[in-house]
Length: 214
Image 1 (cartoon, rainbow, N blue to C red):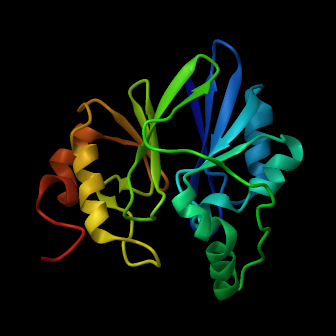
Image 2 (image 1 turned 45 degrees about the vertical axis):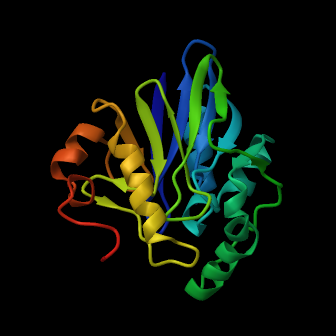
């Protein structure tokens, strides 16, 4: 397995290209902006994109879907609880920020807790981890977690956005705290990390801080 990353857009979001080196098949995770740069990453890899997987549907994670699909007409996978963001709230956010917006035109294929998605010979389990967004998921397999905006190196995703839920975030962080220590976390923003490192240094996993005040 090979993972390439392209950090894109105003919000410096990480778009990942996960490649099964055995078959050359690949998936794109969270193509958020600058579709031309994402497509160049794909072209240089030589891989064949078979799907787009979304961890959630905030503006900075879905903005390049149409441009990517103009080159690769592939399905988009998303948890249905994030459809409000996918269908209208991200467009409203773009208007609020004064940004141009290319509304995704494809209807996503739903994913749910416990689903197993394939990328060539690779298999990833879908883990529903709401809090930052109601339909937020992580794609976990082969010792890695494509965690979106659940967990960052030293921090966590915001829970003060529309439809966020800090109580659900605490539950989701507990789920991640129980993952194998060697799990490598590929977050939606910032550098990669590990569960072991975050349990030791991240105040939201170590218990020194919480996503909500009680």
